[in-house]
Length: 176
Image 1 (tube, helix red, strand yellow):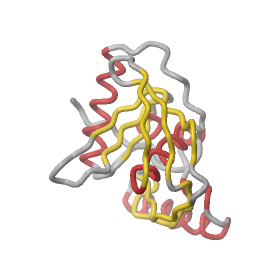
Image 2 (tube, rainbow, N blue to C red; image 1 turned 60 degrees about the vertical axis):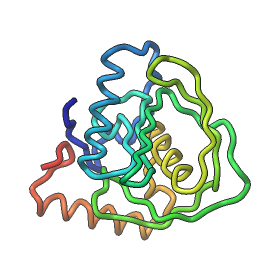
Image 3 (cartoon, helix red, strand yellow; image 1 turned 90 degrees about the horizontal axis):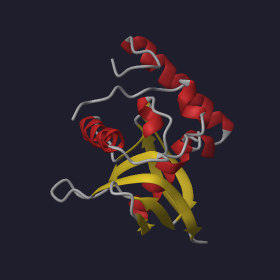
Image 4 (tube, rainbow, N blue to C red; image 1 turned 30 degrees about the vertical axis):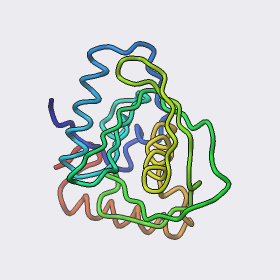
């Protein structure tokens, strides 16, 4: 396994719609393993392939407690049902470092995806896991959590992030 550089806003890959995986290969499984290692190292609870400059519909997530990890690797995930009930949780993003905001999303979602063996799976997600899976699937569609905010808040976060990245000497294409 290997760490992969995480890309930051305003990298255009983050705004592209990722392409579906048509064949699950050893390369796909290696990408998922490397993404998981990168996510844990960051540290974060979710990572989508576009965040590591790969425009494929794959995500990894782990919203479990530190002493009991619950790693999920999803290929071509899609939300097939959303609750009417809403929840507001504070979200952040590895591609928008050190910035968080409250985001309102459906409180629970049902997700269909392929596992690393190509078998179709269904998972009902609630709470933090629901917010995380929606956040990561949004990445696959070129949507960022800041898109749910008012223009003023979004612009403030973008300006602050770009300023911090400049001061750190980290461009949009690397972890520095």
